[in-house]
Length: 112
Image 1 (tube, helix red, strand yellow):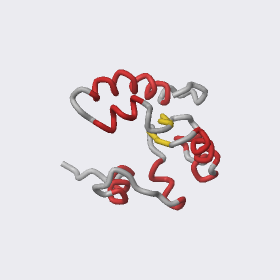
Image 2 (image 1 turned 135 degrees about the horizontal axis):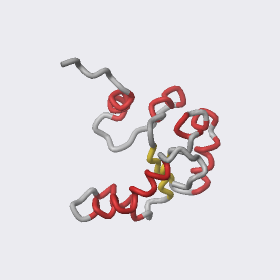
Image 3 (image 1 turned 60 degrees about the vertical axis):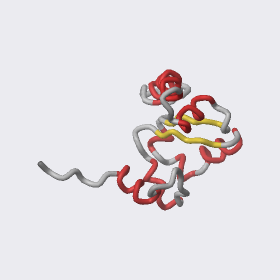
Image 4 (image 1 turned 180 degrees about the vertical axis):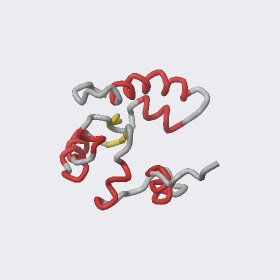
């Protein structure tokens, strides 16, 4: 059996390591150009700044609307993913699945 090639997820894991988050420089923006991106921002202004950043806006994931944003820490779906307990994960699946489907439907106009 062939060894799998190192993919973006592997490289991203090398950058983040065992931390739950990490800063990625503009030069490494391609690391988040994935099938679907889940991004957490604290305010709508921060989201607008992220979406308006030319490096970010140039990524396929951004141009094609394949991002699920959580704004602030009080989004229940974000909380459910963060806690990742036997009780919170079914909630996360129920509420996150439609948002992921919208992000992956091929229509950038679909709200995720």
